[in-house]
Length: 194
Length: 324
Image 1 (cartoon, each protein chain N blue to C red):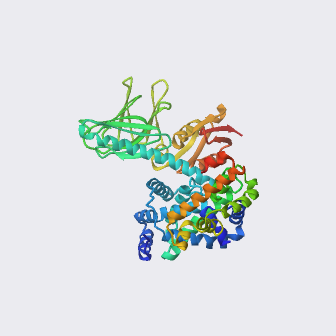
Image 2 (cartoon, rainbow over the protein chains, first blue to last red):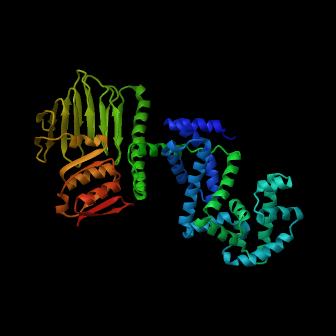
Image 3 (cartoon, rainbow over the protein chains, first blue to last red):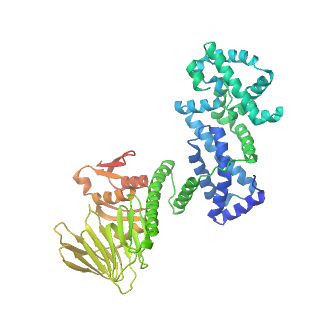
């Protein structure tokens, strides 16, 4: 359900007339969307509400400068994006942050005790993927090599998103099992992240 | 780069790619490129069906912050903004607690003869109307209780500090405190009756009769202030009433006030514990006006206007003050 330009125009008009209920409507529409956007960028959810609190405060404080739906949309986008980037940048050297951030950005078949083993794993993974069924292999490579989302893969192959998810889950399980058999992935990790 | 970015968004990077992404995100020269990649993702999300995730608590916080911004507390520096938030949080808690008290009591009011209890924690103030239409401002760390329906006399019980603006309606209005009672008809006055402070009444308008627990009676005229000293005797003097009542408008005014007393007010006002080192410091006269400032601004102000040094421990909220 998308919001129409004329509705945004109405909300901007009410904001300019200091109508706080317009801010409530803007919040109700944009909050879930900004949240999903922030989650996709930041991965770590703990900080998102603090960032969005500032975003909506800024929308109110700068309401006089917002003129049309186009500038409004880009204003919301710009302040949110900047806040997210600033947070990532100021925490890039924070070990705890980096660990959480990487855990959610790196594909789960690589989650091992330490990432130094990466080169070794990568070669093994390629070998194991070659053993997957044709369809499973195709789905897995579209995800891992092309970086497509499950939804995009589903559209491309004309199958359901659920089927894509199943293929990927099975592939990861097979990968982890094979890796642990050749002693690269410890059994502990195999069971933890199955 | 677009492929890499897609993997980042979908969480399917390999460890090398992750390091590349982190590098990319942290390089300021990439800002334009990053913007265009981000905006693509934002547009996708705008088109998606979104779960109806709502967060009314956050919306409430936003409204409180707006209210604070609009009541002219401008955050001048980022560090101050952080302190401001903490103080805001305290004020909000206070407001919520007082509202909850009022609300809870009004729910049971159908059972008649119910006592209202209004309390403000440290760091919070509130103002409200009594059943007869009189206005009360209740300062930090204070409590006022009264019958939901006034009888032949209007009676309230105070612990702490309050400013009353009492309407005339032919009936006496009585303020009970642990030090004694005040009786008025229709006036504006301030009463301070904290456990750890002197019992002090400041009359702005009208007349007020004060009776201490030993049945000594005095009457104040406008502009007069009475203090019950440690020998339980009243001392009356003429004062500039604004100095003693300005707190209700969000201001604290001091004229050559011993620092010890200033600290006591700041403790209640900002919900901190203040420890002053040295007798000389305690009796140092402080003159100045503090107007809806954040705690760190106040510290800066005092730091400039008096020869002090301070240390503030955020966790224990203890402020240590010592001479330079």
